[in-house]
Length: 294
Image (cartoon, rainbow, N blue to C red):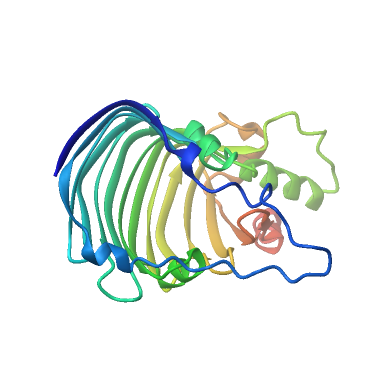
């Protein structure tokens, strides 16, 4: 039984070395299969207590005012409640880890409120594909002894909403303007704008089943565009297949809107595919050509 308080803890110091720096085998040797963890020892654990940290770093993410309550009995470990302040917002959740069978089951019910997405994603994986202030609610279940098995077994729902941000890597307004110029035999000058699509609001939900997430209600708003989307993302293959319908609104504001006045009210489909690391974007030029012909 315990009631512990720590000023600060850097948990990353106690994690295994990164695979890039881990020792490699001799040339020509096949890489050894990593051993799967054995959680049977948890079945004998009898513990209960509270844990508070002024500052906690784990997986390169930094939180403050973190607190958890833990109960472990007969192979079932519950963390409920868990709370922390991080990246301008707050985390709250509860997690259960069931090691009573050979394949462990993990359940999470978590929420993030008022999070600065850009700085969080930079610390988490070094990327900043999304900026804005967001809320995320997740209720997920998975099972397995390694990350691939856990991805394949993932099920549940995630709901999200963001304000005043941008999606980095694509400028949908620019895509439409470039296609429109080509159809009219012209070429746009080099783009000096950032490769991003600004938004004032963005929201949606994802339902996961066997590691594949399906979304039917994605919406986003900006001064130039109203966007709806639907599609899927496969965590196992790390690929996506998505369709966006971008409608140009009647304003000249935002991301080259003056060039798209004549397309006000028109909806143009955009395909999103490829991998998570290198997504691809393709505009339906045929649909745009029909509009311009009219």
